[in-house]
Image 1 (cartoon, rainbow, N blue to C red):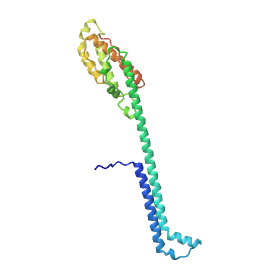
Image 2 (cartoon, one colour):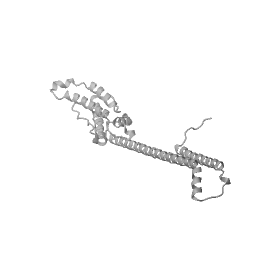
Image 3 (cartoon, rainbow, N blue to C red):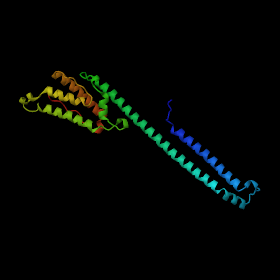
Image 4 (cartoon, rainbow, N blue to C red):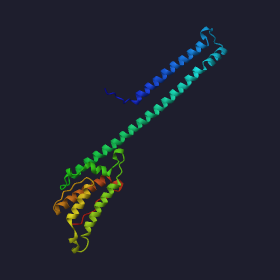
Length: 241
């Protein structure tokens, strides 16, 4: 037989307060009864003079002190429980707000990416791991933080360095053009794009160039739309052929 050990703290606190009140009441009744019997108040006539009332108060002082301490303890417990539940509700509300921010931004990112990729004929959206790309841009999105990561900026810089290296093969004399190894360029670019969730297949030189342009165009659109306020790097122009 399995027992459910999970209890609602709110119900537990209610039961503890009720238990405290009941125990305090019973203890107070017991103490006053003992004093009443020991002092033989049942044999005394009714007396409401100031002296009688003062004597009565002194006789039952221990009982009233016990009641005062118990009530202070009860009020302190209620205050602590109130603070606890207020804090718990605040944390729950904050967590829910962060989750809403995360899901809203993720869905907006996904819808925008799919919509813009339709305008790039050479790009197959199925080759894009949208969630991986998003998580690299916003690693703390689940916590409600939408700051572009330094890792993503670094990966964009690595892509731009490869573009600069390839462009440099065409920036000098015509003799230097022969040093451009497009197969090596393809390998390096495929590996770099894969780190942000974009898969490009190997293809003939001109086809790969078209695929690159489509991918870079999409990356720049994403960066302008979602990372513009974070100074995200844009992909540079490609002068290699």
